Image (cartoon, rainbow over all chains, first blue to last red; front, side, top):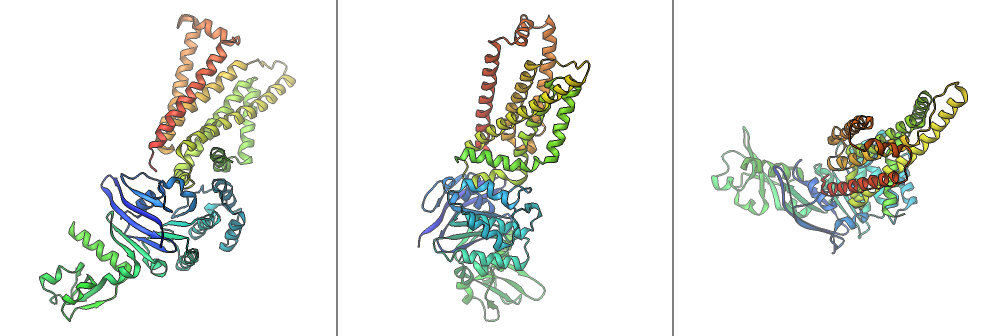
Length: 284
Length: 226
């Protein structure tokens, strides 16, 4: 399994925020979800990978080579807000961008516009959010991108469009030489699509690996207020007590240390983020 | 097409929405009006260069609005290419502005001479050239400011060169009265007569200003974070 993307020790400080030692690998043929709450450092990580900002330390290897700037032609970028002029039409986008890609395929772009129902002469400002995302995907598919980097592409989209985009991404990686790095805080999209997860919290990677491994690593626990002793309470991550009991998360390996009355069950990505975030804030 | 040429093309596509036919017709009408009222081509060319200077700022406006600087990185366009491309784009704008305004102004002056009994039209080649050079120099000062701060933050500072120009014009008027710098009057007199030595020196000075401006812009833009 070869890695399309390798990030090693990425660091970047912006005032009070610091991205610290972010490292992960994305193998070819897979989708990786970059998750974390707002402000965790997902966009900063993506900007470092794309060379849009300069890091304080660390190294990015794309397609086995360093110097992202020379590699960006093989990367398709999809952002929350497209990096295109609002008054451009889809035709202008092609005219403006195609000279920069040696492998630009006019036919593929025309097919993309047709497939996604995008009018060539319509201005981008008249497109819906979903259409703007699809236009960026059409561009990426037209220059033979091997890696799609998406920064919050589904935020603000309705479930139908989100599902369509997730389908597109699954189709994209059906070619095993291609991969997707997908930053989002809508984890339900990743539960459908992602093979790997990198979870960033407060600028630090708290998990990177297979999605199933993350979901198996933790478990959701609920129980009565008097069910746990002090030592057992220390095992609970992001514990929240309410009138009748508590809820929290535990490492699945520690589940056996809890009394029989405590309910241990499967956990979702959303819940992992929430409990981790709560734990971090509780410790601050 | 090499990357710099592709980038200049991208710049034109970026500002293309502002080149609406209706706007261009209005600009042409204003240029014609100015020329026919003044009876010389200088005012028309001045207006054209002012438009050129305004259009030269549009890529910065749109780069701020649509985060185009990040787009350039995703297109693997180096920062040097961005700066060089934008200078070439500005130069091309100036050439177009001068050419179009000269044609319109010449038409305006011709109309004045043909229909007015006392047109007052005069040969103002040198004034026109000086005006064009002044606008190019203003752009050379503005561009590094835009590259350093981006349009939104640089908007105020980018007006400063015009203040300097006005101050310089006022100073030159005083000097040309003969009670300013010794020998200045003679120099302006020679320039007005189209002295062969003055023009190359002025062109060399302008090129030097543009080159210094380019180096400064490159230095600023290399340090910019988007």
